[in-house]
Length: 469
Image (cartoon, rainbow, N blue to C red; front, side):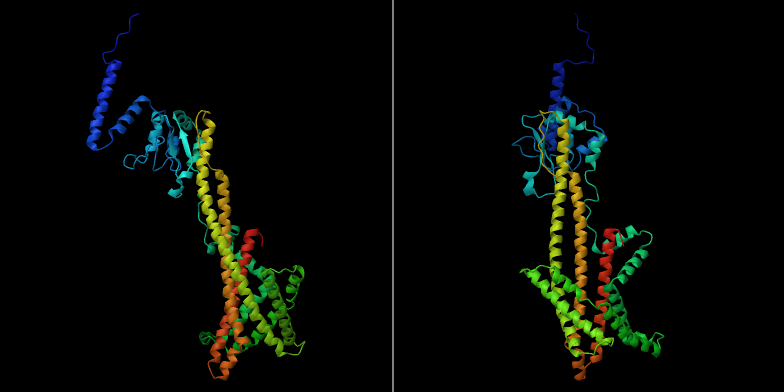
């Protein structure tokens, strides 16, 4: 049989090889003039000539070029070889090398390290994927849903930082009562009035506000008559008696604690024991003062004096207790921030490990996939979200503890005037006793406002957390 006639434009194999060699030499000469490495240029052209890559759609190319997978500063082509420098490797070189499958064909598998946001010192723990021609082709054959999953591996809400403490209560209440945030505040105020402690604090705010209104300078500008001043002066002692009647019988609470708690030699138990003993004695003295004020018992200066002294000692116990809780919550907050940082790192690693698992399911047994990571992306995301909630709760506890400390400082200042008789001693010395009395009134008003604010914040947080008022 005769061979078919060649076209006048067709070339023999030897002619094609000669032309190809001339082109390579020409490219090497041009690359030498530019200062580039001619071997890399020529080998890349030969690889492109040898096997053309399969078609890759935009979604597949996006996942191959994703920073989570391929945007690495190094590309080690085989064991014992140095990574390419930044000048020799353009930003998208790994994706281009994946297109040229033959570049990855080597005696030693080519490793592409997957980068994470971790220090360089821990680079040995970074998982590596060993890919060959077949593995790259099969990775391109992943379904569109799988590619979409890895194109958006992390939800934006997961990496969001915890919100500020000042936004926690308002945002939660606005979420529950989106169109009527005022109604939420009214319902919380109603709940305050249902509590004995809440009624006591509201009446205390009114009592010391009236005291301040009696001596502030701008009161003379207001249309306030002498009769109004006289009414305010009469109302103040009645409010004081009403508050004492509300707190009447409070000594039962310490008795309940002392009877229900088993004795222990631990410092925490001893602290709580003496604190409750002091609270019991304070409430008994207050109840005797209350009975004397309403006329059921003769007035006894002994109970008046020791009620104030025991109250001052109780303030010291409360300050110590709140300070210890504040430090413990701060330590918990530091641990939660560290836990969140580790979980985000695990989330990055688990996303890369998940890519390895999906690749392993579509690659034959003779292909090698080496990866690490035990936490799934969904589990890490849930843990990060839960940690963010705990961080918000811890910051809210710190804020309420700080409010409590400020309130206790104001109470200590107010009580010290009565215990040490500061106003009477200054009056005997013909000093500014009236101005010191004003300072005591301001301290009482400050303590009342801070105590009411703390109670409102606590009830608001409880209502938004339990979804019930």
